[in-house]
Length: 565
Image (cartoon, rainbow, N blue to C red; front, side, top):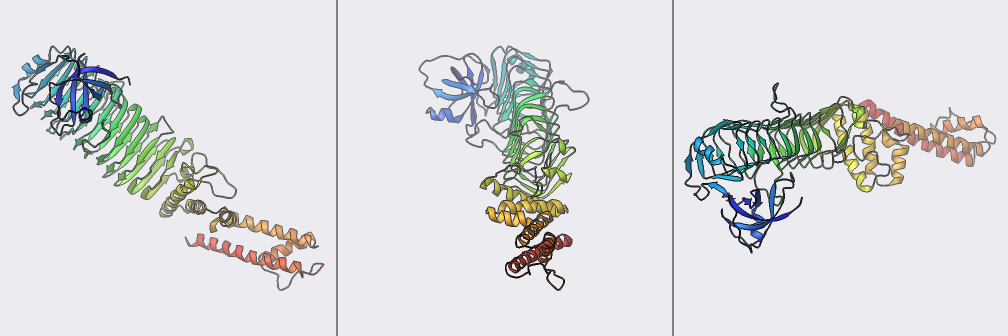
């Protein structure tokens, strides 16, 4: 992102608390700025017509749109020419423009043409062609605004404009971008960018949607889609809208919803009361949804480099259906997000990281994979809460290839840290928290075997002492794993049989004496080996009997626990 120093003329300063400014450079390019660079340069206020020397960079979201990084000393006066109509008028006293007058004013658009402070009847045209960029500032459009198949050699910017009816740039083709800053579409008509081909579509600084849908279908954007504002109706992003698509190769570069260009403050509230639906697109970069209130969110048949849902609040469901991420290390993150009802993830299989840290689900988290053996996510779930969880098939909790262990149940390969050979203290704490969640979920859904496995790993990771982990987990199986208890009992019986043989008892009698001692059953008398069972032998038999009572008690307790569930 190369920076450059240029002279530019301010053509608009936002009236809504001065959130942004728009400038035209001396070589007829458009750039925008936040208030901060001008404040740092000592400008208490900025008005249209001022000329400044600025250092320009690129918007970090699309690496194309020019943005002011610094305002420099203007030690050399230069005049920046701008073709404008109504720029000197007061916004409180706009002039009326019929469609013919409006089109005649923007027809010679070879550089940047500005239409400001106007009330326009409306415009419905097809296949318009513009040699430069068109900027509408503080305009109100009374009727429909439909420029179907329009061709721009530059960009199309609307700043603090109001559209009372339908707005459409269907099938438009721009060498530059569509920029909508602070616009109000709150009329009865919808907003359509279907089939548009451009660098970027940027909507922010308090954009207000219409009563009808916002169609962002079948678009081809090499840069990014940035969407910020308040939208009462559904917002739809579909790669194929119906049986007759207008764009055969839809794709998106990056998608940023709720991520505003100025990170230091929240310049507008992001609300999607009708929900947000994304289906079928291939996003070559990241898809991010931040700091937004949504009724529901559905991502279906989507391919992206990575997906992030951060600090959002959903009233109903969040559904990811057949979603693929190409950067498996980053994967999908749903963090610090409140889902009012269901978090549902479905598909054939899924590979990559799945971060749920800090999120909360009101009812159920559902993970359903048709072929989990081909790939399952690696889940991170610190401070994650869901009232219930459902896994179909339940075997997917063990991962794509369940690991077999001799002394422990198979770990839940679904967890990102479960397969670590030597987990640190921090890893153990996180795994203990995760296994606690799984134990409760499996108990609720009646998967008792998986509940026992989760209980074992929960206790195993919560215990910090290696000695206690070995004794209570490895030997006694945390009271739920029969295999460990029986194997340990057999090893102790063999050990004592060897001790009996060491004091002179024959092999067969030593084995029988060890087994009888372990279960404290001598059939009314001791066996009569040579020499007699006194002295050291008596001590060994008594010790084995005591250990055997402990093991039999644990074994009976574990068995009764399983029967009573």
